[in-house]
Length: 460
Image (cartoon, rainbow, N blue to C red; front, top):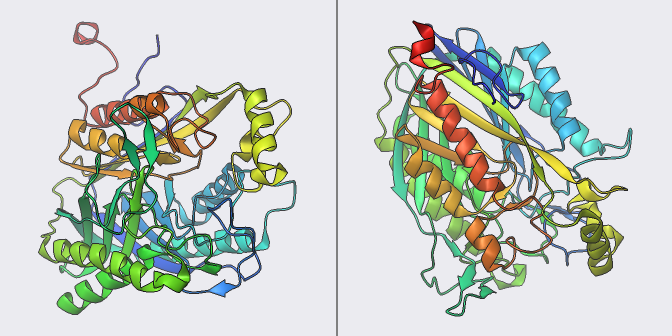
């Protein structure tokens, strides 16, 4: 039987856990431009074979560093389709630990389909130059944020906004029809319109950062678009920064934390550039940005009597869902060898892997604000379930966190079928998502001291 250890020690599944308390909370922010040069393969659409031609709007890494008593959490949000591969993230962690004293790194991607392609693994010494440069900039940005830390206080708020819909339509006979665009804004379910906002202020009440957490694919631009863009996320961030900065006289950094968007599309998904795609992207980003700004301006931040940071990353191992050899052969037969240039390349090995390790992240701030991260594209039900079951009121959910292993459908969706539920884009065993949510929930209970390492009788 696996034994749970008290917070502050390594827990089962090889997790790293940290806690700090008894000192003031500090925060620092930074933003770095990670836009690559033109001429690279782009992320996200199988039918887009042309290389990028330029930049419509810059791609950024936005950074928030939180510190309590020397323990530092670095949150990095990327205007990219996915996070970097495991080897690149390991090098970044090592660098941040040594150069900036970072105790825990949580790095997430917005999932824009207008960014450069990223692979899980590269041949030795063949990491793309743009990726190497981006990682160096991120490390510099984290150090900048650390150097500019100030005493800080937090507050949360919630709003609702409708910019998208569930793209899986379950028919009366139980079959699934994919619903790829919805310009008429037909209501669908399940859907989570909740916009969760975390505001970080100086002790004087000036906003340093606004963190907006929402679930919706950034795919207003479709495969015909060949220019880099943060999609609606960039418009949202600019809208928030201008609105909150104008109201408070202090310009904050807006970070977007993508939620469980695995089955959620924006209303104007994959709009051709010739069909007012930029205008529709701007509408989408403005809607969520205005609501995030409204919520942020109403948040009251207060210093925590006993500030604390707790964090954990659990390595959970799951079998591959399909017969690995047949899966690989089918992928190659259907899509050709280029499929592994941006899809499931962890399985492009002889013999293919039979199981994969997934990082599940959990963070608890001030014993009040919880955040869980899953390394891929969870269906929205997981976000709804996490918030409903989390023992603290403020529960944030991040997809594309500390890794990327494609879609995580619910058990029910996997049985129903459809894209992302029963095809080549989901290759982790059914039930993985449910187990990851349960693991994060146990972590939070442990961090709260409500799950202990031994029965009370043993402690007498």
